[in-house]
Image 1 (cartoon, rainbow, N blue to C red):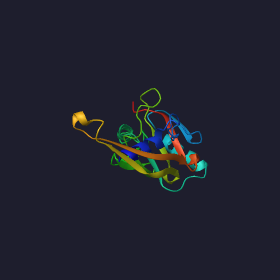
Image 2 (cartoon, rainbow, N blue to C red; image 1 turned 90 degrees about the vertical axis):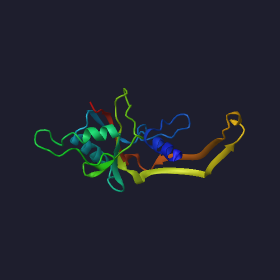
Image 3 (tube, rainbow, N blue to C red; image 1 turned 120 degrees about the horizontal axis):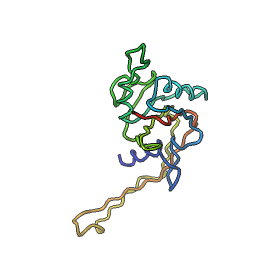
Image 4 (tube, rainbow, N blue to C red; image 1 turned 90 degrees about the horizontal axis):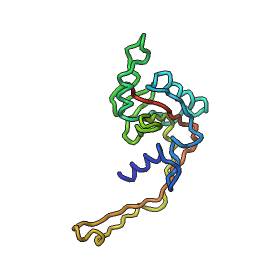
Amino acid sequence: AVHALAWDAAVFHGTGNSNQPSGLYVASDVNSVAMGGVPTFGKLIDMVTEVNKDNALGGSLAFITTPGMAGKLAQTVVAASTDTRMIWGGSLSEGTLAGYRAISSNQILATLGGGSEHGILFGNWNEVLIGMWGAMELVVDPYALKKQGMVEITSFQLCDIDFRHGQSFAKATGATIA
């Protein structure tokens, strides 16, 4: 499970430095939509539109964002003056946004940009490639922590992450909940 969480974090926010792969937030060929604060329904549609412009609107399409952003969008109406429907529909862990599946996860950072920017990603998740070489290695060391009566276990996995087509994704920038 720890390895799977690390792979997720690398897919979303890998820096491309210090042996990390480049995640969606730093990949150069990923579409970007500026939110300028709390996302509107129209800005979320803009994310879908950017992927559609690249003929990539197919496959396993979904949004993913932070739990805080999911909560904010569940309290934000689609059109303030004429609507009673909320932007986020369904449960906060798994709902819908703009007609697509939407997931909230703590794996998406809520501290982007100046520290209060929440991540929102949309795309075809079938386009994420995770390559693994060899098996996961477990090293059991009964000696390093022997004076504390403990055994140290270390796991190691060689892997890399890439995207078939970065244009199959769109990332939000400047999205906040206040």
